[in-house]
Structure formats: structure tokens, C-alpha cells
Image (tube, rainbow, N blue to C red):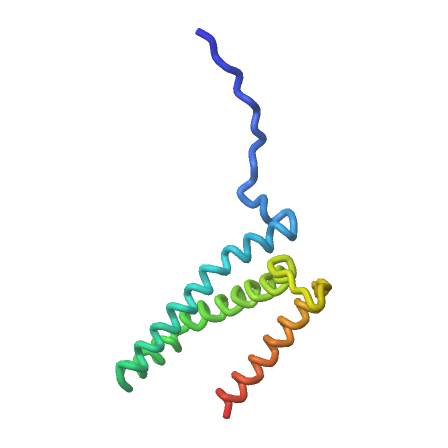
Length: 130
């Protein structure tokens, strides 16, 4: 009976992704998609509550004010910000923009993303806080 030799495989820590910043950001970005999905679900629940009348909307507001929902939404906001920042920083690699046969510098693409983000945020704040 012959057996084939088994190759040695060095054990890998469960937290291998914490050792390098690039790995950590990758894992955090992937994890952030769960919280982006939560925001979508939360928004759909809000729309349903608003469309169901004042009583349902008041129940939704009461539920939303509970400590665990506020904590979840705060954590989700932080993860969505990580998701947004990492996407904006990846944007120059995902899209090649040419103007007059010249490639636009990556810093310009990133800068325009952040500028547009600030402008849209300002418009939303003006509309909401009016």
C-alpha cells in the first residue's frame, strides 16, 4: 500500500486580514455591504410605515428610537462611510476618463467625487432642515 506524501500547509490565523492595512480595508469594505443592505431595508420599512398611515408611522418612529436600532444605524452609517470612501478611492481604477484624448488624472476623478458628495449632502441638508 503506497501513500502519497502530504504537503505541509502552514496554519493561517483567523485574523490574517488584520495584519495588513490593505487586507483590513478590503474586509471592512466587503462587510460594509451588509450594512448598506440594512439601510435599504430600513428605508423600505420607513416608506411602508409612511404609506400605511399616521399610526403605523408613529410605531415606526417609536421602534426607530429604541437603543439597539439607533446603535445599529450608527454602526451602519460608519460602515457606509467606509464603503463610500473606499469606492471613491477606487473610482480612478474602475473608470478611465479621457478629455481631448488625454487621460484625466486620478486625483481629479477622486476630487470630483468628493466635491459632488459634499454638494449633494449640502442640498439634502438644506431640503431636510428647511
